[in-house]
Length: 571
Image (cartoon, rainbow, N blue to C red; front, side, top):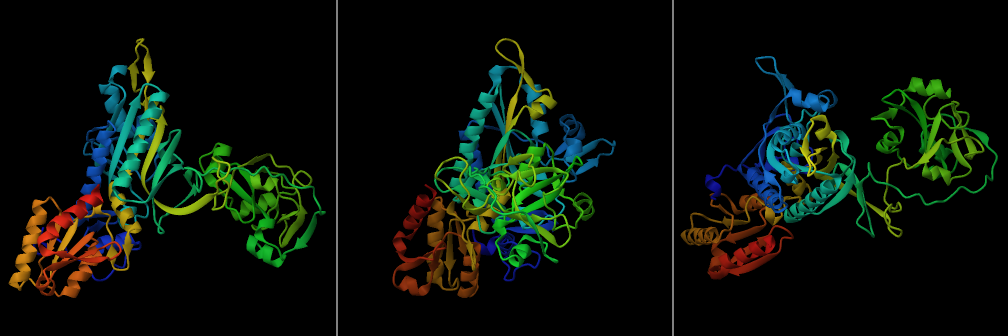
């Protein structure tokens, strides 16, 4: 492809509304252009990378035995009403009516549609196992679309759905997809972790997220330094040390803490550390129950773990008026002593003695507080967020390390949630009707490209991994008006094309400095400079975008050496 004839306009300045690096660089390199909030056009450079990710996905889906199909983006409301999600999904589901007043939605995901297809087409166990997938545009009406392709409203997604006769078969299908996903992201040239995750609005019994590791990642994840355990911090289990509290050594006493409400303020005022405090959180469930939750002072509550313990969908900190009503004090002074609420506590609190809590009185705390002696805990449980240094829940010697990650894929064990709701059944070998077991498996295609940029860039621009780079080689013609330079560049360009290398020829009549800046910005893995000085010495300069290493290539051997480099990088 010739730069001068390609739709490729780079921007020198970073657009003001682009917050994260992938959004900035995808706009500056002309990969995408905004149409509306959270909705983008994919220009040629961006589409080339997206198609490469799609090709890798298709190859690995086919290898795993999945079959491609294509479902509509517009879905009738009746299917979502059958599953119960029409009422549950929320405002992210874009709903509308046609001219006949029939209700529809734009599909954010396709569990209902695929289950409807299977219940109509699959009647016998002999047609199982079955795994169907598509790569298609989806729409979720995000309240605050931002970060370009990282959190858009319209996006390209690969979604696959497996159907099996029993749970054992579903487990096999899940493992196949899990391994296929590992191969996909390895082939894309990304550093990632597969982590245990919450199932969220999709539902099901268990799931894993595939996280591209990047300092800018929105998600916090932890992984063991000794085994394969990894999880989103919202899901991460924690192993209790088993430590029990020593006998009380102090009598409980009230201490004045004027205007000191936060853990840090109280600890500093009393000359101690946050770890010696137990904070009391007054929370409310979506079902209206108010409970007290105890955590060590330096820990954070994990809402998902608490919801699982309470059997609710959501919890939130109680408003000021509720805190005052149940404790008799403003927020910041709540404590378990004398509190007439259900009291739940994190495992760590069980091992603490003579700690500090709020006194349920303004400007006062208790010191020398102990469980059992001073108050009763209804239940101890794993209720806090995991942090680096925590004991691994899977192995005896490991400790957790923390990372930032960008979710690019998610696999779910759905069980019979949708097949029950939509009556998707088959006859088994005894002629008995059996409800199908399902799994679903998604990859954000554009998001994968954006995550690759978040992980691979420097101050000059993108550093594309070879497998998903828009082009593999950039041939920079320094002076297109020099006949010798032009002929050498054109010859190399043709030889690379003949060898099957994806090459962009920068044949623009621009200053060398401008061309080099654009080359660094675009992030094409290999850049070959064709200039008069090098040709006099019979050589072309090769610069690798990753690391910037420069080598000289003999003109006669350049095409072969470059082809070998590309093939080696893709092996």
